[in-house]
Image (tube, rainbow, N blue to C red):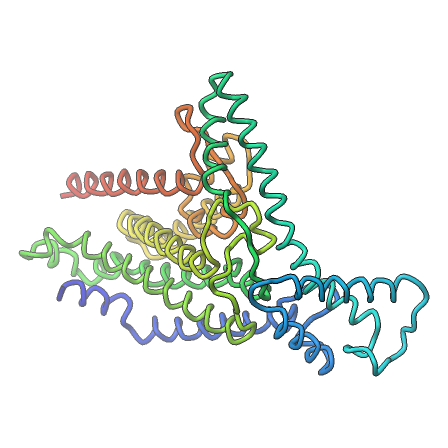
Length: 400
């Protein structure tokens, strides 16, 4: 534990590192604020931060009445209001200010109600019917492919039957904040910068000061020299992800409210085909966990680069090169070809993109069997990191 503490103090518990971390946390905060004030988190014709007082008041009144479990009364109210506004703006209508309108304008009332209340509620109440159609098709497919002895398709459709049944999202809340939180990835860049800055001098500085020989010839240093550095770097990688994950949640919660933490993930339109039957807050925690694993693996690889290339500038170039190439590979996560899938699977940066991978049922065929892509990704990354660690052990033994 003392050696671990000294490693952390030597590489990360430094004024320069903390100064850079604070600067990046501040940049991250202003980036979130810029995103919010640019979009307001909302689309189409209503942007909350740029809206008038009357528009915001009408928006809040509708949420106060409609938020929570939907019932016949709420659905009837929204449908009637939508139809009334629709009829009003279908013909010739005044574009002048009208104090009798909630927002001050006829089309403003229509647009706000339609985009942020009518369409989302319509999606929720029609979801079960559409999903039941998907299940019926899956049952048909199982019967058909069973006759054809197609094991892969039978397993795939059996998975759909098991994971998509009993879905009925009847809780309505504003989803703009959740969509922004689940897709926000600017903080990943800041974590990566901090890891590179912290890990680069790990070995080159010790070699320069002749500390490497002293450490590897000491009683504990001989066995723990590399393992303790790996543990320290993994610890910092996980700690940074948890730090930024908490900051992102707190800031976006302050901006949007993030109501309905128990709302199911598929209640968000963009996740209608997700295979995950979990709430939005559970998915965010899963996303943070996936990023922790991803950054831990990245930290191990960066440590290997720093160990093999002890020149600071050369190590920096190698780390930037590795990051650029494998970050590019992770961009193929929506690909369908064999090569695109392989490139996505071998990149640890793909673990940072669970929010994209979980939007639909992305599958992969392995030894003739069906597997979800994201679960197979974890298996591939675990295998690769074991191979890398074994390779590192062999290199160290040969070096000695």
